[in-house]
Length: 286
Image (tube, rainbow, N blue to C red; front, side, top):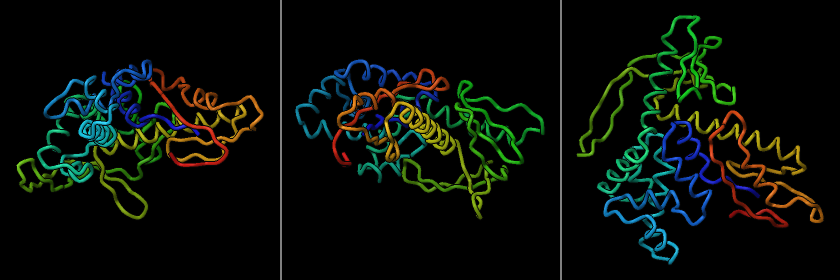
């Protein structure tokens, strides 16, 4: 079984062009380097040196482990616009800590919130554009938005399209809680589209989530094809893991599966992929 490491966080930073991607590249090249989750945890209030925190985690320090786990929750959970209130519930922390943590994530990876804004503006420009207008290019050329058969099409790096039916732009009102605890309402122009029999509203954070998860799916699909081509018979896949079955006496081993998963398609050049896994005679989780 092979399992990609932090695939969504990696794709997100790659798509945003955020320099924070170097944290994953460095860790991939040197397993003793500071782990991205530890790095994020070390930047939270009452900062600690990342290397010192990593040593404390390895030594079994429970406080250090809790800080590392909070950093992991930030890296994996806040890339799509999660606010402090939701993070407070998600991570089980207090209001002040949640506010500080979300602020720190956005300050550490500033190109991520910029990508939310860029995609929101880009897709709305595509919806407003007259017929025949060239697609709106976003994310450093990795995404394109334009009209397609009466729908909004978001073209991915692989060339596959995400389709939003019957797109329209209209006023949308949301209520949110400020950091001071006040309930406020704001109305702004937003994108809505037909979703089954209902109408859904979306914004930049959700659009980025759609794109990132779709790109991760395309990476999985490409890896599945490579596995089959190399005699790694895939028996199941779930989320970011692939399970392959090979003869015990054959020459194929776990490292063949991991190497196959870590290959990067030409359309994803510059994206660092890493995978780990295990081999056994029956499937197990973890």
